[in-house]
Amino acid sequence: MKPDVLILGAGAAGLAAAKVLSDAGRCVLILEARDRIGGRILTHHDATLNIPIELGAEFVHGRPEVTWKLLREAGILAYDLPFEHRQRKNGRLAKLAVDEALGEVMSGLSRLGRRDMSFAEYLRKHRGGSREARKFAINFVQGFDAADPERISAKSIAEEQEGLGDVHDETQFRLVDGYHALIDYLHRSLDKKRVAIRLRTVATEMCWQKSRVQVRTGDARNHAVFRAPRLIVTLPVGVLQMPPESSGGVRFVPEIPQTRAAAMQLASGAIVKIIMRFREAFWEDQKVAKLARADQGLRDAVFLHAPDAPFPTWWTLRPLRVPVLTGWAGGSRAVKLAGLSKRELSHAAIDSLASLFDLPRSRLNGLLEHVQHHDWITDPFARGAYSYVTTGGMSARKHLAAPVQRTLFFAGEATDLSGQASTVAGALASGQRAAREVLKSR
Image (cartoon, rainbow, N blue to C red; front, side):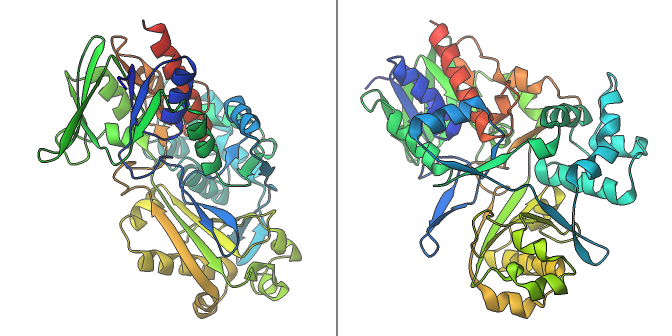
């Protein structure tokens, strides 16, 4: 098969682009560095409990049409999560009104004017909100946006908050069979006569001129070259930011300075995620609720916050009642955990849960059955979880998404212009957009 289009990356963006192109009769070759498809979607199935475990993307945020259209086509079922947050505060595990806590601090974002600043600088200048509310806002930005408050654009958070509106109204969903069910559907829907995928194929150099691209993969000892008139690049922004000469970096010949500059105005959010399966759902025990100084509603908890813990955010799989807790560290908290061994991360997680529920570590260790984790910071093919805009970079996504001489095209959540950046929906929409640009380029 002689491809009309090469695609770097078999994640949500790359597969979505390939589907549009193959449906239009184009031949496509996807080059994927990993030994699997899915990219930052990483679903494992726990045979013991017969449920999907998400080490990467987990939630469908709201009702983005690009996602729900594919879910309807595939017959994939989703269920919504109860919106119930609790936080460790003053020795109690008390209910948390997220809108109220954020509203105290975020209200001044709408009055920023033309000048951008970091969220940290905004907090230093904006005196609204209690000390606890300001602390929660910082934790929210580090957790939800996976961002460094000293780097993330305050204007981008203002835009995000406007899009979210009332957080209570932004329902979140999980897929019954896990996010990989969507990836599997996209894969199955590709015309196998027109689309091929090569795994374990690491692109290192893209030599190009108008309507001609040559992608070199591998190293000096074991390399291959692939050619096509067009190339869609879906590499994460963390990879695009790597120096071309470094291990894991990619080289463009000639270079694409405007695209690189746009990538540098974004940042790749730091995330470490851990999933712990216990012998029983101990948090549903009335005695545990009493020890944690929580009401009996703790048994129905969804999101749990321990602001000062190594893993400050946890969630259950409610409405499912299974003995699994997911720990989430973002921003500077994740950076501190990056590169730690599974054993070290487990210790940090148990410490976090002990402080959250006011339980002895020995009891938690005695209940623990299995641990899985993924460090997205040190993942060589991700270099972070998802993108955010740094100070002064409000136009960066638009510039990163811009085609180069109708030959190089860019997709991935960092390039999304539909308002869904940093999500799977954004990746899907960007892949479809890049594919349409290719089809119009002839």
